[in-house]
Length: 302
Ligand SMILES: [Zn+2]
View 1 (tube, rainbow, N blue to C red):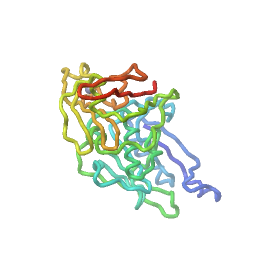
View 2: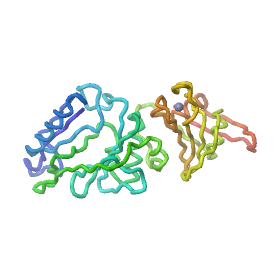
View 3: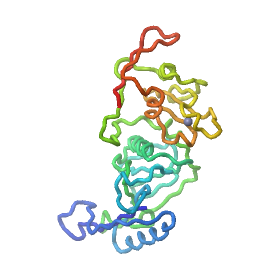
View 4: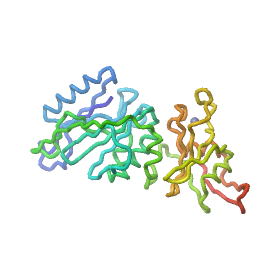
C-alpha cells in the first residue's frame, strides 16, 4: 500500500497555492502484513504537522504509484464528495470519512472483488451522481486516513474522522442498476480507439440479444428499464456450469448493461459482453422474427 505525506506549502512560503504541499514523501508498505506500521507512520506524521494520505487501492510492487503498477482487482468503491452530496436513495456507503466538518469521502465495501477498470468506471458514475470529484474516481488516487489531522485550512486544524454504517457489503450489480450511465466518455485505457457507437436507428435490448444470438431465458421486472435473464456467453467458465445469475438490459436513458453474478465474470460489463457476442462486424443487417424491416447497426471497430 502507498502512503503520501507533505507539509502545507503556505506555512513555508507566502506565495504558495491553497493546499499546495511541499517536502512530500511517498512510502510503500506490504499489505496486509505491515498495515499497522503504515497506520502508525501516518499518525506520527500527522502529529508532526504534516498532511497524510493513503492510496485507495493496492499496488503490485513498491516501484511506483503509476496506473500500470496497480493490482488488477479491488473490493471497494470510493468517492470524494468534495462540494457535492451523494444522494440518499442510492446504495448506502459502508464508511464515511469526514476530512473536515463539511467534506466527506465515502466508501462501499463490495461482496466480491471486481476489476479496477469496472471500479473506476463506477466510481465516476457515483461521483457524477453526487456532484463530487470525478478526478478522484480513477487509479492512483490518494485520500486522507481517519484519525489524522487536516492542515489545509491552517491555522484551523480539522480532525479526519470515521463513521461506520451498519450495512452489509454490496453486490457490484446493485451499483450497475442504481447508478445512471456516465455523462462523460470514460478515459481510454490505451491509445488505440476502442469506443464503439451506434449510428442510425436506436436498437432495443431484446433486438440486440436476438441479433447476437444470445439465449434469452426470461424477462425480469425492473423499474429502471428493460431487463432479461440470459445465458451467459461465458457460462462454460462458471463453477458447475451454472446457467443462472446473468442479466442484460437497457435503462430508460438508453444505456445498455450486462451483469453476470459469477466470479469468473467479475468486471465484465456491456463492452466486454458486446465484444464477446458480436465480435467481428462493422455493419450488419438482421431480420428478426416479428420485426418488420431491416435494422442496420453500425459499430466502429476497436
Ligand atoms: Zn458469466
